[in-house]
Each structure stands twice: as C-alpha cells, then as structure tokens.
Amino acid sequence: MKISKVNETNSFKNAHTVDARKIYATIDAEVIHMTLTSGQALKRHTTPVDVFFYILEGTGIVEVGEETREVEKDTIIDSPKGIPHLLRNTGEGVFRFLVVKLPKTA
Image 1 (cartoon, rainbow, N blue to C red):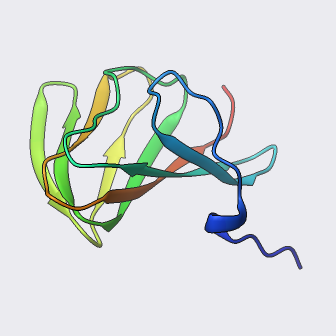
Image 2 (cartoon, rainbow, N blue to C red; image 1 turned 180 degrees about the vertical axis):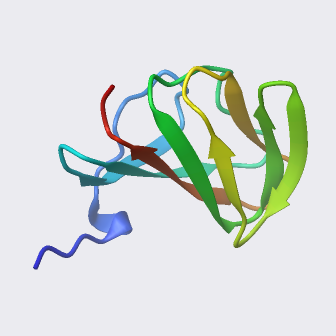
Image 3 (cartoon, rainbow, N blue to C red; image 1 turned 45 degrees about the vertical axis):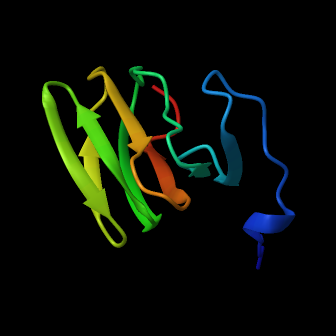
C-alpha cells in the first residue's frame, strides 16, 4: 500500500505559477492537488486527455469551452480533451481542487 499526504508532497513548477502537487501518478491516471489563493487563476489552456475537477474547498469560477459556472465544495466538473478551460478563485479564502487526468497520456 502506498499512502501520500498532500502537505508532504512538494509543489512542482508549472505554467500557471500556482501551488500544484502531483499526489498520484501511474501509466493510466494522474491526480494533481491545486490550491489557488483569492483572485488567483489558472491560465486558459487545453489538455490532450479528458480531465475532471473535484472541488475540495472554497468557491470559484470554472470555464470549459464557452460555458462558465460558479462552483463550490463537493462539485465535479467534466472537461473533455482539447477544450479550453480554466479555474479562478473568486472567494476570500483558498480554492482547492483535484485535477484528475484519465488516461494520463494521449
């Protein structure tokens, strides 16, 4: 059994310059824990694989393609491959979410 603790996993350098921690990675899947501070956002981008986001804490805006929605804790958002998307913290506290890529690579 392998156990990982988010707070003991190092943040990695990323294009969004936000706190991102790869907490699970296999040939088949990847899970990244991300934290955005108030006002912080990911850059609009696409992924070559399907992704879903699971909101852990806080409130924010998610844009997938032409759709924009406000989201909160315990929400799952589907983002198909090749569709531009971004997440933005619109709250006062932190906005934490998981990015799950399935399959991990195209």
